[in-house]
Image 1 (cartoon, helix red, strand yellow):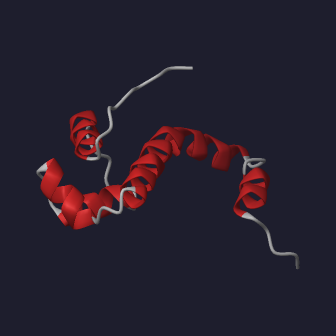
Image 2 (cartoon, rainbow, N blue to C red):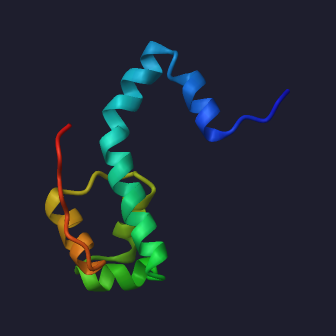
Length: 92
């Protein structure tokens, strides 16, 4: 069997209406978390350092990054500020 890339796998899974429905429900949260992780890693900031700057714990940052909790907009805003970024929300 041919190895699939993540994009190929996702494209195939999105053909399933149930999967597509669940994917669309979680897409916004996924994009936010993906961006937070990207900025944190690019800034060479550990979860612990970010937590201290944002006034939370490393465990909370970890749970946010593995999507086991859904953070409030206020917390996401504090995290963004701690990363030197401004949170912007857009509808399209």
